[in-house]
Picture 1 (cartoon, rainbow, N blue to C red):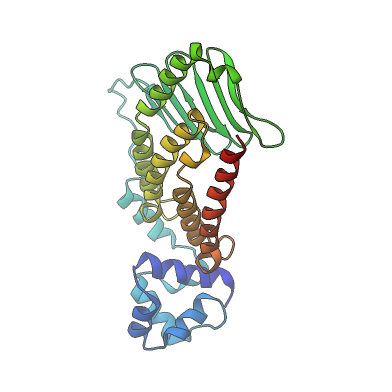
Picture 2: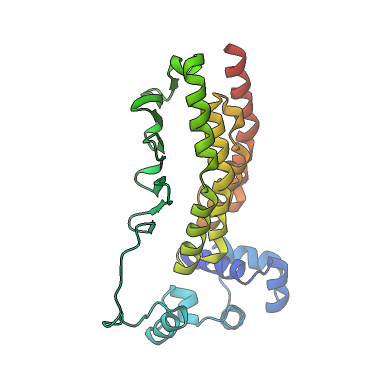
Amino acid sequence: MNIETANRLLQYRKESNLSQEELAEKTGVSRQAVSKWERAEASPDTDNLIKLAEIYGVTLDEMLTGKKAEAENAQQENADGTDKKEPDPETHYVKSDKVSFKNGIHVENKEGEKVHISYKDGVNVLDKNGDNVHVGWDGIHVEENGKNRVYTDKDGNVMVDEDLNSEQNRHNKTKMHKAFLKFPFWAVSLIAFLAWGASGLCFGWALSWICFLAIPLYYSLVDAIFKKNPSHFAFPVLAAASYIIFGYFNICGGWGYGWIVFLTIPLYYCVCGLIKNNE
């Protein structure tokens, strides 16, 4: 059995909320046999393939090749509402400027505060005063009153404007901090959860709930930046989210080895302690 088929068997079992023991009992084989199927170390015989297809509610062809029949695809599209009717020509439609899903997630509230999230550009938060926080592949950048207050240099060091520590700017810094904490980021996570789940992509509803883990990550990151204390960042939540993604997408050994990411948690806080002691 090739690794792609083995991964599909693993995915179908998880989507059916079955443990290896439960599946073994349903098919009349040992748990070790199920484990070998999912590691591509052995192949189910014909009878077991038929049983697996019945348990998972799929055809043999879909289970072995991952391709659905055209009729099934059409039926699924109609059931999911993806085969939608054309807009009514007699209805007047206007574009909503508040939420957009083109090339990412874009949200704007009534006060003019904006959040843009995309894989290419990262996370950008802009408040009504023009202050901006950017977190992306090129690091962290915080702009206040048109001046770059926080940024990540070419060596990965987070550089902070010394003026932020002065009394005359302390009030503006606190005001900006509260503005980002007040921003309803939970709404962004909710929209992302609904859009991802409804799309059915990347495990759909089974995995889209991970969007809610972004809520503590956002607010703790804001705290860490403005208080200049990296230990305020919810790093354990990031580690948990990484482990879940490794497992679902079989990255870095999947569930079997992905747990190693949790070993980075004490290392992270150890580094935070060293940074604090050196200040």
